[in-house]
Image (tube, rainbow, N blue to C red; front, side):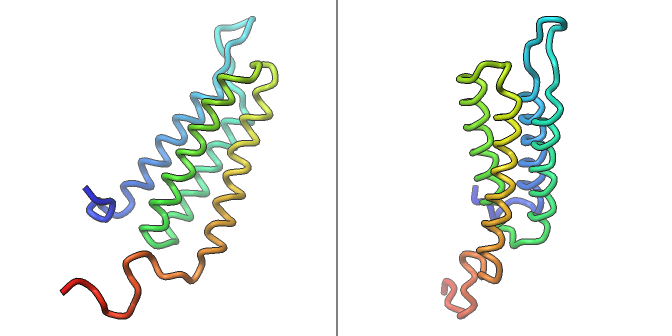
Length: 130
C-alpha cells in the first residue's frame, strides 16, 4: 500500500496521536514518594512538537507532510528510548525536553528549505506514465 493511497490527513493524524502518546509515555518516570510522576516540561514540549507538525502538515503538500511526520516521529522514538535507557532518571527531564525542541527546530528548518519545491512525482512537465 502506497502512502498516496491513503485518505488525505490520515497519516498526519496518526503521527500526531502516536506522538502525543509517546510524549506521555516518555514523560512518566518512577518516583520514590508516589508510584510515578509526570514530567510536565518534556510532555508539554512533545505535545507542542506534534501540534506544530499538525499545522505544518495541513499547509504543505501531502508527500512532504507524510515524510516529515514519519521522520520526526521516528527520530523522537529513537532518541526518547535511548535517553530513557541510558540516563539517570534524576537528569532525564532536561534531556527529554531538549529532544522535541531540537526536532521542532529541525522540522521548521526542513520546511523552510523545501518551500517552493514541487512535491515528488509532480514535476509539472506533463511527463507522466503513458
